[in-house]
Image (cartoon, rainbow, N blue to C red; front, side, top):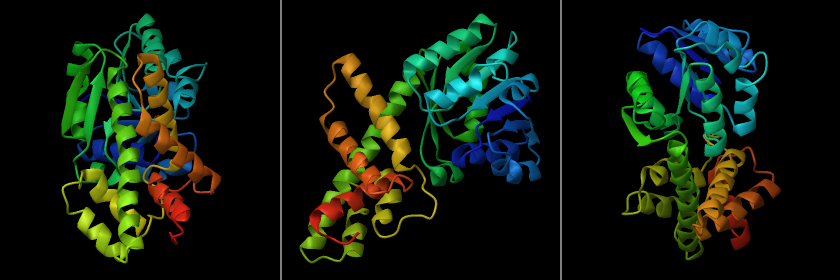
Length: 293
């Protein structure tokens, strides 16, 4: 098996490494704070002191970081991944970042003889743990074929969508719908609640109705009680909504529901809910409706 590297061991990244280890892969990992990696080190993950060191010890390197700035930080500079790139090294970036910036990074890697695909995922920690994650991949077809078996060990649905950056476009298009769906779901719940229907009953009916997408099934109950640790917080979701609005302007695609939902995320930030799961848009709408969230 190829020697694997993984940079960025947040909630999702850690669970991905856990799955790769369970499949028998050797993984070398790095995270800005080592504390988040201790659980994985105990399970057999090798630790590296920098992104560059991860690349030096790996054939295929995965990365999953917060945003474009974070990706630039782990890719560029003397301790970055590009500095250690040699011919044949392959990179799989799972981060949700600007498609244009991702293409820039891929071009730098190719100049040194390596290659990179963007491979964002659709799903939550629960989806990943249940083995239901779906992966979108953009880049050269031959590189996709090389890394597809590894991605299949993370999630069962792996789809090639085209050139570099296009998987990110697909991911952004997916995520904007998550937030829009959550706001619409919240409207339905609050209409029911202010009419005299118990919130628990409204949630039960809606999550077993024709609108019950996987997102509604997983996050609908969050209007009753949010998890202690956000699956995908307000800050992260707003980053993706802003990427969507930027793409909309570039491509002349009107984004009315994205724009409105983005304002609710801004309101959530103003209410001090930034670290909560983006399902906190319910709390914003409840406050506006005179309902105790």
